[in-house]
Length: 412
Image (cartoon, rainbow, N blue to C red; front, side, top):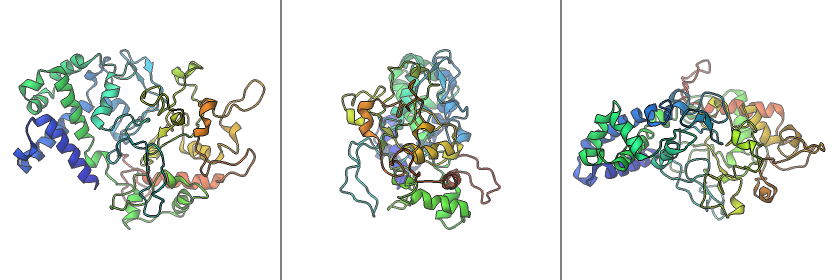
């Protein structure tokens, strides 16, 4: 199923780039063309000359050796013409996006044991707010964002592409006509990026210890097994309700996400420059980056559930990068409602300013499923030891496992 999706997208790119029906091409020609696209995409991914600064490539933030996620430990990465500007969202990993469905406002459970009559709300789409469906369209966002690569427009990008060492590849793919047209050449380059990001060995290798465990080729340690049980237990971690851990009905390995958009109410990250403005709020699905649902108050505060594959490699968590380690992230789920003073600041009068990054009118959108819920002072759903067990289990989702826990994972 996964490989089939990849081939379908690759063929769609071929239709776009070839200018002729793919039926006119032999299988060998199709494979050769896909390989050219992949080579060009890999070169484009690593090319900083496409940015206004000349110093920022896709690979600068999406580091290949770190599951195509950041290594800096910053909540948000620098960008802009002189790398002095910052956005307001944490950089996600680009791995395991191949099964993300198109954005839809109505998600229904496809789990064989779930209730497929319940409308789970918005799901799918790429980026934290799901506003684009294709990788090529997603790549266009940072390319032109004034706080990221900050390219001034198609003419600037096309000029850099024509001057790049891989220009010959693009000329071969585009033909002389499209190679000379700015927007056409940029579109071809973005499609090449899309094909590159569908390279199984790089972007969805399924090479973690947990994958080996599912195949009967590895045994979880006692702590990892406890963590998995807590992860799946609806009365404890309940993590699998959103981060699916079971093999799909079609045999696809678990992606550790249901692709849904959800409001968690994480604390405001005051280290993000945009948050210095007390009137600014990143509300995810209802804006400000996404504009088509700005009138939907019931969508405010919702962000797409990311995959937890390779999550142990991350140094920042949630859409605003407010937490710096996995233990903090899991602990927040367990104690958000029972110990809010642990996470949220106090007002001048000493009371806790709960959900300080989500205005009061939108707090009805907050997810209250376990382990959330309860009253201040109640016993949390997870103990510290149980949180440690879940964190240990999450370490089994890192790609590059070599058959022994003493071997350091490659990270993708």
